[in-house]
Image 1 (cartoon, rainbow, N blue to C red):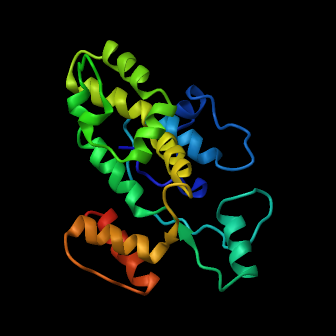
Image 2: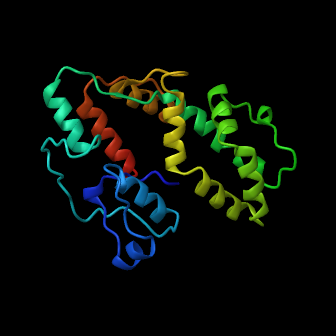
Length: 211
C-alpha cells in the first residue's frame, strides 16, 4: 500500500501533520523517503493531479545519492547503463503478499507452507519475521487490522532492505528498460518489448493514472 513516489520536491504535507511526525531527519540523503514512510502509515494521502512540479535538472554533489547525484553521474558517464533491481525480486514479494491472510491467527508458522523464494526466506529469518508475526497477531482482532499492521511492519523501507539484501548475492541488477518490460509482461499477461525509454515511461504514467 505504500507505493507512492518519494521525490522530495514534489509532495506537500500540512504543517500540523509535519510537526506531529517530528519533521524530517537530518540524513544527508533520502530524508524524504523516511519521512513519507511515517506519513503514509497514517492514511489519508493521495495524488495531486491538478498541478505539475518540474524539479531542477542540475547536477549536485551535495548528497551521496538522489536526483542531483544521478544527473551528475549521467553527465560524466553518458554511455553508462542505468541498472535497477531485478524484477524477480518483486515477483517474490508479490507471491508472499498474496498469502498474508493465511498468517492471521496462525499458531505454528512454517516458512515452507508459503513456498517462498529462498532469498526471501533467508531475509525473513535474518529479520526475525516469525517473532514479528506473533506480535502482529497479538495486537490485531480482525483481518483488516492484521493487514494494516502487517504492512506497517513490511513497509517500503523493509522492501528496500530486502532488495539490497538479495543484490548481488541472489540476483543481478538489470537495465531499467528490461525491468519495465518484465513488469508489463507480468501484469498485462502478454509479451511486450519496447526498447525506447520514452515509450515505457509514457506507459507507466498511464498505468499510474489508472488507464
